Image (tube, rainbow, N blue to C red; front, side, top):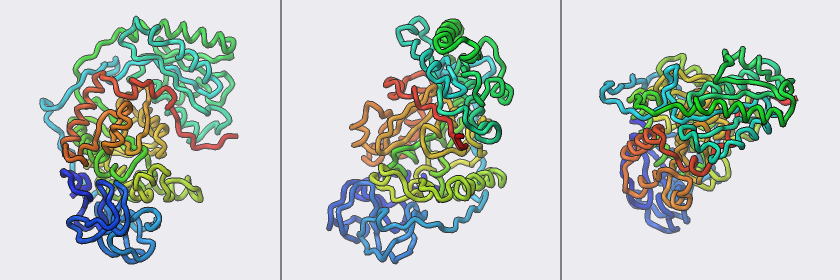
Length: 517
C-alpha cells in the first residue's frame, strides 16, 4: 500500500493515525494537556500544537519513530506514551535503507486517447505547446542585468495594451556569468539553464544580452547549446552596442519589432499530454504530508495517465525516503542515477556543512511541526504520486520522458523551479503550510495550502485550500481531481493568484555550484 493510499481518507477527530504500525499520531487540532486521545487509550502529557506528533506508546531510547510506517528519527531518551515528539526529543541519525530497486515497479496505465483530457494551449511551429506567451530578455552575465531589467520595465501593461495575446516582457537576470570556471559543470549548468529559458515554448521570442568581455560569452553559449540567431532570437553585447543607454534603447526597439508576431497567436485545444508540471513545496508544516502533498500526488497520478509529465525535484527533500522512489524505478539504470545524486550531495557537495540534507530544517518548518529532514522528505516525496519513476535528470536538463520523473536540484524553491522550467515545465504546482509567496515567469504557479487557517489568512496568495481534507469537506482523491482540473484551467490561460500580484519577476535563480574567483 502506498503512502498516498494510506492518507486517502476523510479525517476527523482531534488526532490522525496514518498507519496501523505507527507509534505516533498527528494532532489535527491543538490538543490540551491531559486530554484523552481517542482510539489510542492514552492521555496527552502536555499541550500539543496542531500538526505536531504524540507518542502513542512508551518509546525506548534509540527506538525508531514511525510515521506512515517510515522512520523519521529515533527517540532521544525513554519517552512515555502521550509525549509530544519533535526535534527536542527525536534524534536525526543515519540508518540503513533497502533500495530494493524496481520491486514495486508497475507500468503506467495510460488512458485510451479518446478519454484523455485537453486544454487550450498555444501551438508552436516545432510542435511544442505553450501555456503562456512572453517575450524574454536574458542576460549572459550579471553585468548586463540592469540593461535587461530596464528594457523589460519599459513594457508596462499600458504599453502592451495593443498586444492582448502577449502575457508580458520578462527579464531573466542572475548573479553570475563571469568570475567563474571557464569550463566544466558550473558553466555547463548555467548555459543549459539559460538555453532552457531561451528555447522554452512559453517564450515567443527572446533577446540575449551580454556585456562583451564576460566568461560566459554569447558565442560560447550559442555554440554549446545549439542555439541559432534569427528573427526570434536576437543577441548583442553592451560593448559593441555602445554602452548602457544605447543598449537599453536598442533593446526597446527590438522588442517593439517582435511584439506583432508574438501577438499573432491563438489558443486551441491540445492534449493534456503537453502539460509538464514542476512540483515544489516550501514553508512546509506537519500537515504537508497529510493534505496538499499527497493530494498533489493524486493529481499527478491523473495527469500522467493522460500522458503528461510530473517533475519532482529538491534532492535534499527526498533524502531519507529515496528508497521509496528506487523501489518504483523503471530500470536499474534510473535507480542508480537517483542514488548517485544522493551520494554526491552527501559525500561531496555538503560534507561538513550546516545544510538541510544534514538534518536541520528551516525555522518555519520546525515551527510547523517538522522535526527534521527525514520527516520533511516523507511529505515532499508524495508530490510525485504513486506511479513508476521513469527517468532521473541533472539540473536544467531537457525533460523528454513523459510520466513521473526526478530532476536533481537544491531545496531552495526559486533555484529548484528555475531548473524545472529550464527542463521544460510549463506549469508549477507549489504546496505550502506556512505560506510561501511564489511565482516564476514565464510559467504560471498554482499555490496549494495545507490547512484552512493559513489559507484564510493568506487567501490573496493561495489558489486552492487542501485544508478541506483536514476539515472533512473533501477527500484526498477529490482534492486531487480538483487540482488536476485547476491545472487544465490555468494551462488554458486562467491567471493564478501569483500572476495577479505580479510575483515571479525576480525568481529566476540558476544554481551556482562553482566557485567565484
